[in-house]
Length: 187
Image (cartoon, rainbow, N blue to C red; front, side, top):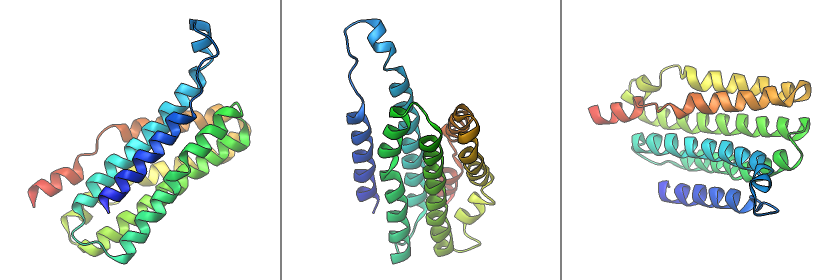
């Protein structure tokens, strides 16, 4: 399951980089026009990398892969596979309200799918397992979902507010969460 997921995530990143358009010239001014595309790519790359990193740690805590875990994993991969589409749409439309809102909906769907996968793996491990204790109430996950929910209507007020939320949540998750890694080392 992990190797398959790694392959899908590698393809997602490849599709995103192939969507980048070359500058229309060979000077700094031409490159300057590519900055929005590059920044949008960097944000989406960061999100995919964050999911890959956390997915990697979560799967190492999984003792047995059940049918439910397989389907939950496919559910997550489905939403992640839409990242290149929503990234390109949002950037190509100049961060207009609807594409930016849809990007927020996609990030929320990814967060929900990851939470479902995490819950199934924790259920399999047991409520008293080290993994369940390590994850705890998952304040970071719940706060992220709440921020994504807020970003969706904010895109219609000022899309830059939604973009700010996306960056803030990514920064929160870029700080490595070593809880699962430490819990696995103690077993």
